Length: 157
Image 1 (tube, rainbow, N blue to C red):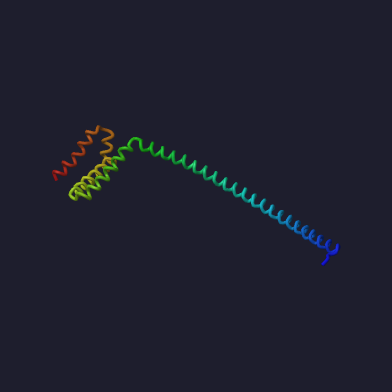
Image 2 (image 1 turned 45 degrees about the vertical axis):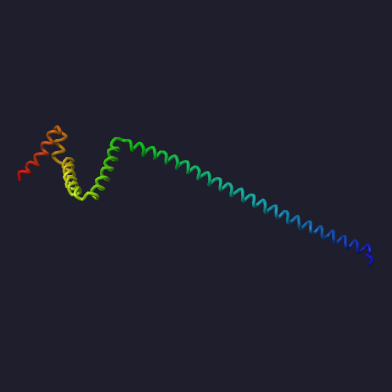
């Protein structure tokens, strides 16, 4: 089986043409993959930029909230130190203690409720009415004698 020169040339030509077509095909595929990699890089850069902007916005908001929280903490502390706040705190503690005492000691609660109603009525009378005006105009000793007068009248009746 002898191959002729022409057959060898056809085989070599076929191989060269096959190699050339394969080379061209691989170049197209390589350029296609390079283009795809370039698109992936652009997408990744876009995503990283978006993530960076979002992280920066969250960090700015977090810093703003921390600053606001610190300002509120300082404000609450300052308000707690204003005159009268300590008394209000003590009043709330006493109120809580009295409510617990009413639950634990039933005999105490009825006497307490009557005293509380009398104190509320007296406070209302002091805030509005003749006693308030007298207290403001005259000395407190005069208003105390007025308070005792209705009690003496009620004791007589």
